[in-house]
Length: 303
Image (cartoon, rainbow, N blue to C red; front, side):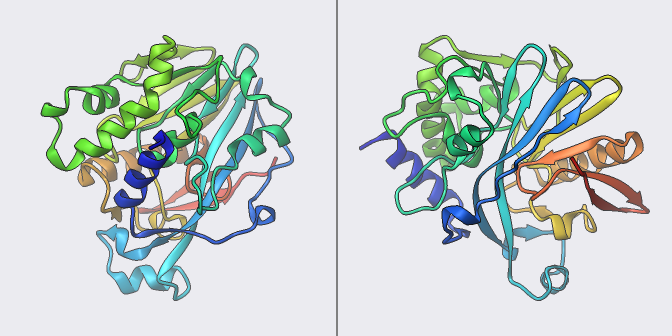
């Protein structure tokens, strides 16, 4: 059985209530331009798209959520990675789901080609957290590295939780932890896996900002250049139509629901105050946000 097969089984069993859309290649959004942030160039790479059922939400009445989505019982959601070209590095933030037989996903490499970037040129991959729609695209079906010259970096906190001895991991998470270890194995064996400490400065205008809650070591990556700043915020938000207006609404697969809410409100508040651009794994476009009392308003960012 290939690594992709067991990885796919773990992914789909973990999020059985998430439905990948039946889509043609032409419906995947392809960005034909970069967003310039100081000396950095940032591009959205949509790897897949799916519908998230509203019953994944917590902390909000179901009918209120339905009303915010225009009467639908699920919300269309992209799965994004981000390409960030700095003066010294070609960076990938997250790696998408990867290609699974029978699922319309795994467009990351095609998106990179469309951006004119060969996977071998990527030298740094920053992982916000170890959920499968963020690390699945790191490897081929037989477990080989798809980015042979890249160093993968992730939070020490996240790594310690998932990579420790299986006897120390909660029983309901052991299978998932095994798949995470299998996915990262080729990078570890090639000495191409490194961790970072909470809030560590990674150099070149890049910082790892702890945003724990969705997972034990969930991280936001800050890219700052010439007075401009963009945050790749991973899974601080899943439902754009709902969680800006209701930031207290969480999702059932947050590892610590209250901590995830605290992180979301903290980062949103700081981003609104400092006019920081947000690039999320599950929003269709990069945004700036404004604070309106206890709620937030997202404003799409033009190129």
